[in-house]
Structures are given as C-alpha cells and as structure tokens.
Image (cartoon, rainbow, N blue to C red; front, side, top):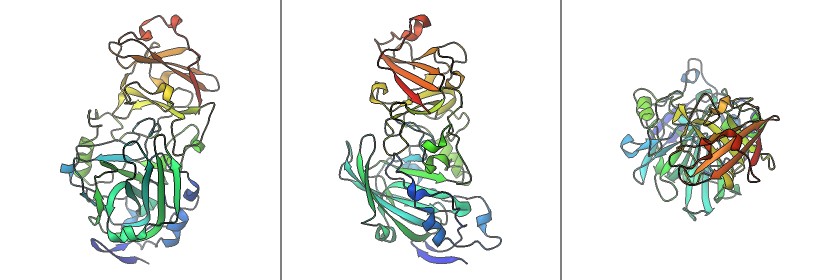
Length: 405
C-alpha cells in the first residue's frame, strides 16, 4: 500500500519502511539543542506504509536537492562539533550557516513529515521571546531527517503544531518551551518547507539518524538515542552536491583540513584512555538539555588527525577565550600535548597548551584507575605555561575536577 498526499511541491507516492520497535524515543530527554526532538516511533509505526517489491525503499537514501542555494551558505559544520557549554558533547547534527534571512528551505528528497515542533526561547542572552520550528522527516530504511531553527513554515506544517503538548526545560544558558505534535505531510524532492535565517538563528540544523548504526560510547546508557545513531548527513547527497558541501566544512574562521573522517565523528570514546566523553564524578547526570556537567577530550572535528580539542562544560574549566574549540597540538610521546588516546590510567599528570608562546591558560590532566579523569585549568601570564617546566613541578590544587564515564 502507498500513501498519496498533496504537498506544496506536488504529489508523491510515499513508501516508508516499517519502523523498528525497540527504540522508545518518547522517553528520551530533550537534546541540548532545543530545536531537535524526535517523534515517538510508536507514532511513526502506526502511520507507516509498506514498501512494494522493487521500491526505492530497498536502496540507500538519496538527497537530490540542496536544502538552500549554496550562494547563501558561507560554511557548514561537521557532525560531532564541539561548542561548550551548550554543546559540550559531540553534536548529533550539522549546521548550515547563512549569509541572509528569509531563505527558502526545500526538501532534499521525497519524505513524510511525521513530527512538527515549535520552540519559544523564554529566557536567552540573545533570542529571548523568539520562536522557530523543527520537523522530523521519515525516509526509507527507517532513517529520519531532523531540521531545526526553521523561521517560517508552509501553512500545512504550521497547522500541525500542537499548542498543548509542550515541555519547558533549560539548557546551559537558555530556558525554552517546545511544543510538538504528530503530523502526516508528504513532500516531494524540492518542495518548499519554509524559510531559514532570522531572529532566532542565523543557521539551521540538519541531522540524519539511522537506527541500524550505533556510535561508540564506553557508557552508551548515559546518552540519548539521537546521539547514538547520528550519521553524516552530507553523504546521501548526489554528486557533485556532496562534494560541494564537503568543500564548505569549517567554522567561519577555519576551513576543515580534509583529514579523515572529513564529515567528523560522534565516536570519540577510546576505552581505557582519556579520549572521549566524561561526566562529573560528583554529579553523574544523564544527557539532557544541560551539558555543563560533561567534559570531552577528542580529536578536533576540523582537524581529526593532526589536532585535538577540549570541550569542557563546567564554568571553572571553560577556555578563557570563550571559544572552547581551540586546536591543541598532538604529540605521540612525552607528557605535553600527548594524544588523548595515548593517555592511559598510569596516574601521571599531563600538560596541555594550545600555543605555548601566547596562551594564558593550560590544562593538567590525569587518568587514574577507576577510571577517573581529573582536569584542572591553570591560568597564568601570556606565554608562561607550566607545560614548559619539569613534570615534577606539576600538581593539582583544590580546583581540579574529577570525571567518570
């Protein structure tokens, strides 16, 4: 059986593979980014239609249309981006950054929108009182595309937004209310979804999730399913669109090195080492809206082979620059800027500084049995890092924080 539904771009025969049952996403806490919320798969399964023999649902998902004109996109981000404290953990979606407002957003392929949400920023340092939309599109092979920070939507999507199923919660720096609802809106490739670029965000989120894929975490039970099954959302685009998007990966100041994995990675944990995601030992929370209790030591998303990065949520550890994604050199020997995946539970202190000649802060790191990872930020005069001193002079003070998996 196939569903035939009118959409803003015409009619499409939609074929959606039955959704698997084990993931109970209705019980998943809100991700740290308020625009992204999954619809319970019980709703998806109830409305899913069966695929006929020979249907394209047997083939990999293909995106044949760019969501916006590339002329309006100065850069895009990789999956697994780090931006503490709001995005301390690897980010399960990418961002399309924009150089304008009111830009038309299009569907990349035939899909059915099964979930619609509207987020209002009740308290925020930069968008208080603003609202935007998110949609969850169901694709073949049980994959889901989540688009967030949509400024306006076509009337069919706007009419589907609930005014009663709402939740208020806080992230590291905002309090938001998100109202979400089930929908059944069928779109053709290229159909208009709405517009992006506006008061609530100069970018939009683009996340692809595949329940057949599992990102590695030492303690996966601590993290929400969207983080566990996020995959690169650029790969499904046909050539040359995918190459054009890869060429735009950066952060607005730097362009990605092209090192593998080019799209970034969610799997930054390396068991038995300091590499990966950690949570405060004194407050071992599950992943919810506020990621300020987490710390991540990982390959840098833009330079995954040659640089590494600290993403530290606690205020006492935040980088003085406020950037939080400085590139740290990667050394394969010694105890200064040692590769995180080389640091094992040897109980020794290691010292990290992003640029010894100018940096005004450094980090001491130690991994001990447990495993317990201890981190301390050390502030100092510009260029006066302790990393240049003998390791016998290094020591923690009462300001050090301990983390566990």
